[in-house]
Length: 395
Ligand code: PMP
Image 1 (tube, rainbow, N blue to C red):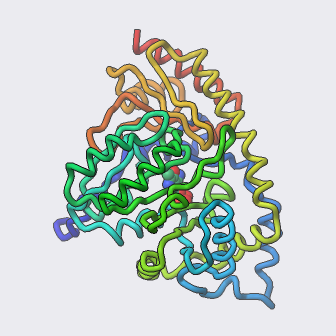
Image 2 (cartoon, rainbow, N blue to C red):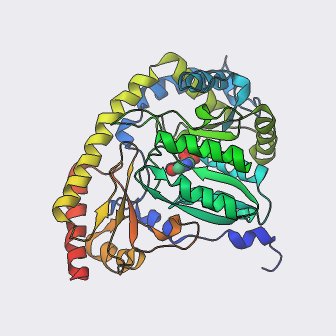
């Protein structure tokens, strides 16, 4: 086809989808998807709620509602954000189709072709997929155990024209599991002000902290409203609901709402009603608290099994929350090739090779491994098998 728009050149299939398709095969042990543990979904509660929402006398859950989102749900989200140090009202909140739509709408609002987006190195692949159709350029900034290196960020901001957006996942980042320190959060806000850029703070894992102390959001440290803050119910309730939110200054939120109207009119009323009923009728904080020991246990088990079975020369991050560890292998190992030629055929294990998580200058010797969706015995067997194959190919 020659008639596609120019942006379609940046809409390409990814090799990852091919392997994620395998994740449904019961013979495959998947460390690939960032899927929440399905045994943690509040199924009984949601069942009751959906039953009560679907009665002949009460059809409002099947009707259109406001494009910004169901007012009750916006108010409940605003309450939770206020409790998290970001004072706001329902009017400041836009309900989105998962956090992913917040990325798409924010890109559409701020990015012209050739504008520069600064990302962490590596960064969330899904964000790149959302930004790409706007045809931005990328600059990536190194990370360490304190998150994005803001001194390196300053250098990029000082030397690069047309930087519009700095994108960060400050809490238990996808893919590394790393968290940005308080000092760096403050520095980032300072730099955004000095260099006149917008910060896009993406926080779907924020509430899954199972160790260490909660840090303030970047938005809560920003006196001037330069931060667009995104969140999601995917990891604290269920991703199938496709519910997220954006918190931003009135002018920004209003434009995001208009872009949302153009994209999909509104989120499904039924799911918004269900989420509102869940938040007002059940104890979501207790639900979240009940998930934390499960994920902490899974992280500990995966890291301990890697310590035992992965060969020398491999290293990994230790997340204080969230679902991921980022594993770095000897530079000569290309994880995409290793997965395709060795790991899948010989062990039935899948992960996500690291290269697509780099906005520029990809590195092939990393992988993102998720511990969230795999039962313990299969996790141990999968990591052990992978360790043996690694020892083989690296020998
Ligand atoms: N941001 C990050 C960093 C993510 O990891 C994800 C999904 N895993 C999303 C946004 C989008 O998630 P959802 O649309 O399900 O809220």
